[in-house]
Length: 175
Image 1: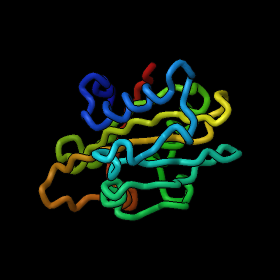
Image 2: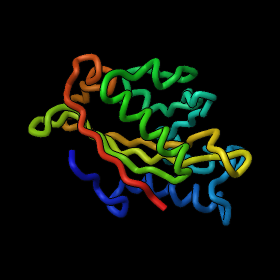
Image 3: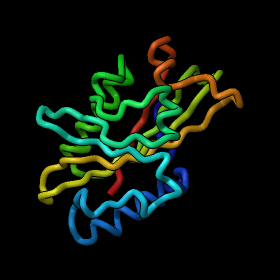
Image 4: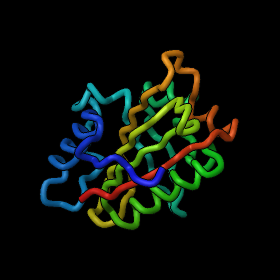
């Protein structure tokens, strides 16, 4: 995948989370975790993730929404990204988190699982930095939505990784 879809054309649920994050940060570069109440945005709750940024940096899933759990084919709550993701997809995700922490800016990205000719699943994700001190990113609020190319919804992120199916990834910075 060479280019990502512009954020203006992103799923409305991602736009709702972005607007919520913008409102919570106000004039600050990014809001703190205590500013965020996932229940404030109940329509996207099944698509939300909250990720702890630990020294290293290392990224651990604290909250993993039910829709994301279903699409991943597992619930990695309490586990590290580098423990549950593999291959190029793992490198791509870790790169997104590293970029987010370094640049302290939201990131919008897309991934296609399966071949371009026979797309089985497609996702859009929005990753938003949170900071308790206003300087370092210590948590990430993310929203991820999935579209299945087949009504059977048989492909999961984990299955795509395990089978080494092609996964095309693209990203864009916001802000």
